[in-house]
Image 1 (cartoon, rainbow, N blue to C red):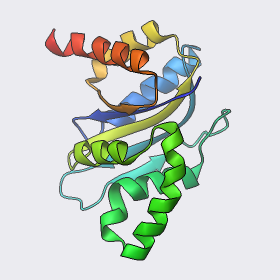
Image 2: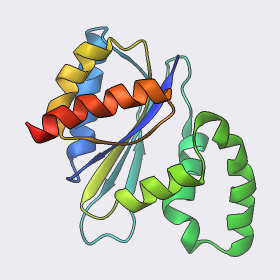
Image 3: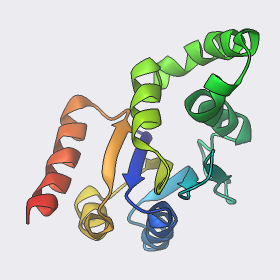
Length: 165
């Protein structure tokens, strides 16, 4: 089962560093990164910079149009006219099947702010305990996922342990 997760980092470079870690873990066959995109928002910029992972050959790659729609909904809709916003709203209705709804958009919009970054990643075949062990040092905050409630709770619990330690 593929999982779409969004991770927020307290620095503008955190997401890129985490992506490099995931790519290394993929080479070790501990996870399959099907697709990913990085959002970087340096302090002083009006909008974030978005970049899709260059290698989208994995089964389940989402493609530029998906990322464009998603980032448009999250970061740019308030700047667009009402008609464009309404059209994007209707189009985004199909995204709710993968856990992308108004709550998701609001959570990401509220947390990814100037001075932060985020990693949006579609993964599968993860050796969860080994990946989590490597990923803990990134100080990532899980913003959203389409994992089951039980899987998400275990993931949040694993990261909460390191924040208090």
